[in-house]
Length: 79
Image (cartoon, rainbow, N blue to C red; front, side, top):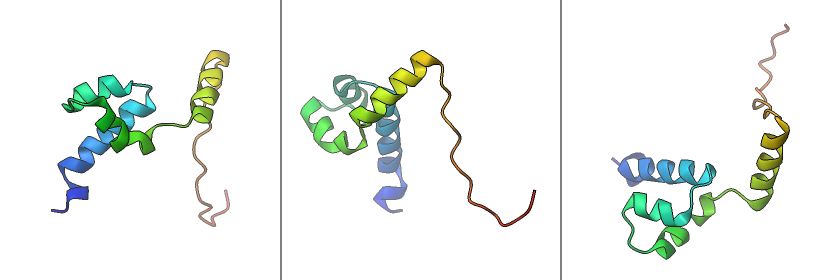
């Protein structure tokens, strides 16, 4: 089994889910068993949502705006 298909992929998914939900790097480092939060930041920083994304979600949450579902590709069938 390749590294990207096993436990490493599961840890990466876990980290990205927590970061997307707003978990701090310090807490994530603790959850992952890293003694240095700097290591966690260097390893997972590319998974952190951008400031623009966080800002948009925060305002949408306050206003009660629900995110639109992702667009589905046109399957060519008429409704």
